[in-house]
Amino acid sequence: MTNEATPSDSSGPIGTPVTAQDFFKAPTDLLWAVSVPARWAILRELAAGESRSVLELAAVAGRSADLISKHLKSLREAGAVELVAVAESDGRKQYYAVPSQYRRQEAGKPVLDYGVCVLRFS
Image (cartoon, rainbow, N blue to C red; front, side, top):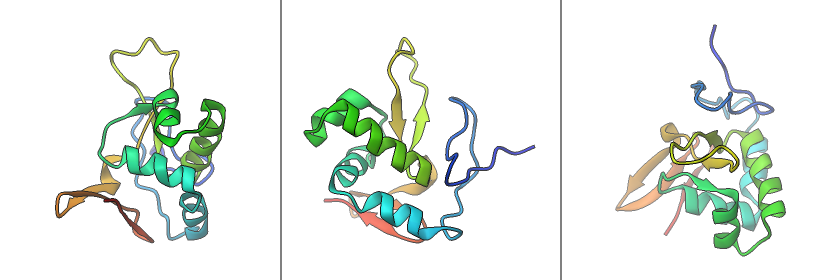
């Protein structure tokens, strides 16, 4: 049995592999999720491939941790990010990352390619 991602459940339990999201089924979910400036800042930070905690992302975006958590929920539900386990974490913090199948480099700059849209960061 596969753990297939859906817009309402884009990441399985931590450590459980999730199949590639089919963004063509509901492209507006992803486009709506990435259209908010704070979410764009989150994705720009995660595009390099490293996982970040809510507090780290809040500091980068200049927003409260509560607000960033809400934005991360929207991004997770759209399939743009996932919860990840971090070895050195004690489990109390949640860490997020963009799934590796959507990340690439183009001219030395990070790119997120979700199929229905490509996000380029400078």
